[in-house]
Image 1 (cartoon, rainbow, N blue to C red):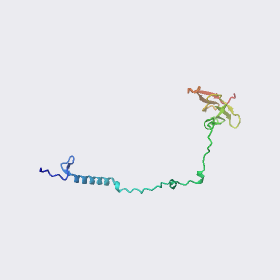
Image 2: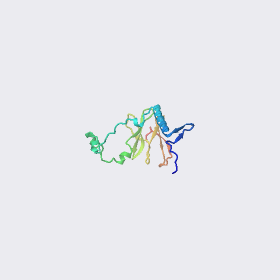
Image 3: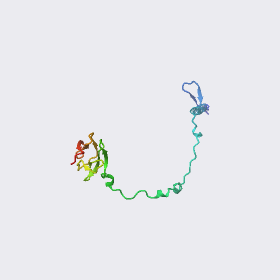
Image 4: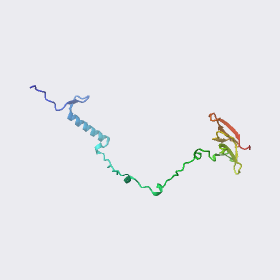
Length: 174
């Protein structure tokens, strides 16, 4: 029979920078004490000390979780009729009204033969007249000049996005 050396009770661990050896049980106690001290310094409770609110139980029956809506909300709120595209994407009857700088005239966009054009009228009168004569793309915007008799608008040629500035007299008829 060969004699074996006695088994040590704990393995020794040396701390870096320290000449002192610490046993496993002592080292474990040291780590626990350090963690408790760190928690106290941060004043944060340990996870086991947090009181979570109790979980609410939910019924597995869908009717038990449903909230009753008032009767007026149970009625359909919209029509099942489809909105025509012309209403959504068509030309407006009137758009972009603008008063001249001297306050005597009103210019606006309105379709002429299905295409948006600039119209003008003298305030207080019913002398509406079309000022521009676009028959292809329509005019989307215009501006008054400071003289209150001239309108400016931009238009491209057949969608090439090469816009030109046009000037037109808003006072002279025809």
